[in-house]
Figure 1: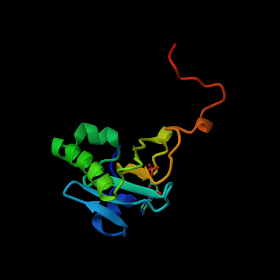
Figure 2: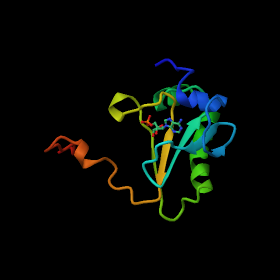
Figure 3: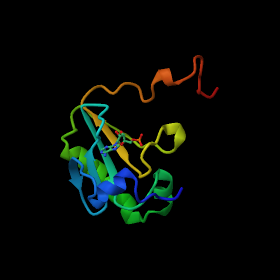
Figure 4: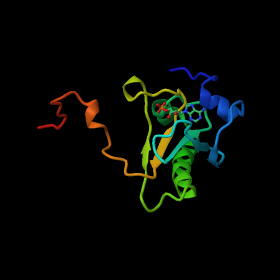
Length: 131
Ligand code: AMP
């Protein structure tokens, strides 16, 4: 998918839109989600123009990939998320409900986060376990 330079996170990276920044380095920016789903909900984004984990893992340089991974950990440490733990999640595409077409990792923390996927999202009787 072609990268849209006018997506909301591109505007934040250019300084055209404000953000509540919690961490920044040469490779990544982290800021609080505008519609938090947990007491701590922060987004970590690469500075390069990548739509999703698919493009990023295929096209980003090794430095960019290592830099983004380091930034996720650094952001969590900056936020003091050591004791209770946290969840890191990246949505890609329609089935995962990706809304903003610039790769972002969500960091959730500050409450028990429940099962990895909502049971309610599964049709009744669904069982994905391989027999
Ligand atoms: P996703 O569904 O993974 O694409 O998540 C996109 C996230 O971006 C949502 O959690 C939104 O609340 C968040 N978001 C959208 N616009 C902004 C913004 N201007 N500043 C911070 N977070 C935003």
